[in-house]
Image 1 (tube, rainbow, N blue to C red):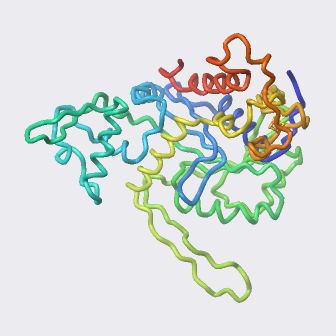
Image 2 (tube, rainbow, N blue to C red):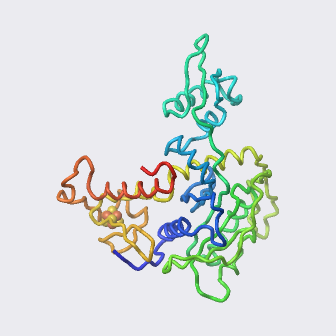
Length: 354
Ligand code: SF4
């Protein structure tokens, strides 16, 4: 099925950017043959969530990452698998002192053991000992953050600029980009807006599923201490307050980058189906100029995740006849769509294909 593909919403635009990035990244030149990418959406840290994330990953190391399963390792599990020794050792000797009670570490060790990613046993005096099954690989080469703003007018740029300044100051991602709709003008309007020069600008032609660089980003110093801008003057005439900062040390940044990459590994960008209603009889996946986008046959549009949800008044269940044959084991078309998206996501993760 083919539909026209105007970016009807930020959500649709975001899915188009993710698909373009999965096919075409990087926007200039090409990746080294030993490097591959993982694309995800809506990930970040506590106070900052990026629309699209591209992880440039070492191909071989990514294959080794598959040993740890399809699910993300959270910070506690990462501490366990990264420090688990090659030979049996008491956990308190093997793992770094956590700075909080050891009982939380023991809980993480049990979770890691239940997931089959470390081995544990009771040693002398009933002490818990562990050893690794695989070395946790160093699989992340670069992290690229993209902010999607299909309509980057002056007011959107004013709202976006402080966020981008924070991203540049913290330097958690190697590059920060803004993706906006291509206008075809000699000078793209985005270049005239007040965007930090360190951020790159991508102009996206949704009709052609293509993107071009309007401005190249600066590579940020991810291994140096970063600066968190915690408060900034409002810019109003009578505001004489000073900006407030705190430092983010490189170890904190390394840990956060790893956690973001782990979540990207688990979720990818196709997880939108988990919050939408593919079990609705009107839900389709439509091909639009090379991109695959959710389509609502009832409303005749690409629905956003917010409108295609439990509260949609037009929702109708799949008719029982759609659920014959494999039902209830395989489910109806809604389940099949989720399985299809999940298979596609796993195809992007070497060694997890099925
Ligand atoms: S009718 Fe509502 S729930 Fe069904 S596909 Fe359309 S937006 Fe989604």
